[in-house]
Image (cartoon, rainbow, N blue to C red; front, side, top):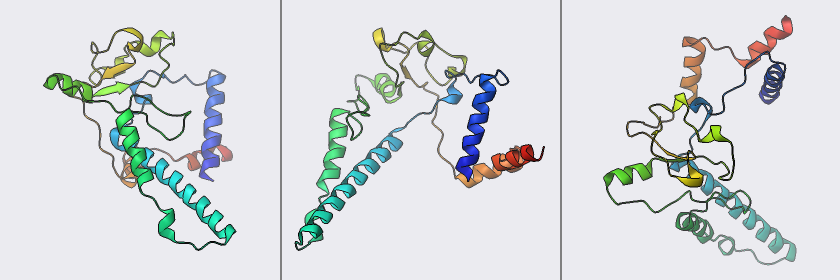
Length: 204
């Protein structure tokens, strides 16, 4: 039911923007962007490898049952497949198990020339945008980047403005419990839930 409410809310907002009743969101604003840190990237890759491994085990068990063979569960479980997938991702930098949605250059050899270059390399931010694109707004600075992204530190050439570095004083926020955030939104900030908004509009 919540998905239906959210879909209706999204369609209503899209129609209001199309009719000119609501302003468009600034896609270059840092508020509308999300950073994928190392922990989330490793978690997604591990989940993909585990799911792929379970599918292969299911197929082998189904074939063994269909042929009437004796089943020894240890013969179907090979932990090296998950380990090999993680090693391949870390050694080549190609992130993902499918050929179409792989991300290249995620894992790199760290630059240990000096302390500043090492910290700068650890704070690289890559925008997943086509390098051959000719849209200048994606590469330009935005006022919301002040204090979060380093303005002058970007390479030359095709990746200008697409490869940035976090400022040295910028810090990534640590995740919090969703229930605490929901309580703060409802009690302290007066945010109205989507369900109550839809019921109010329906009565009106």
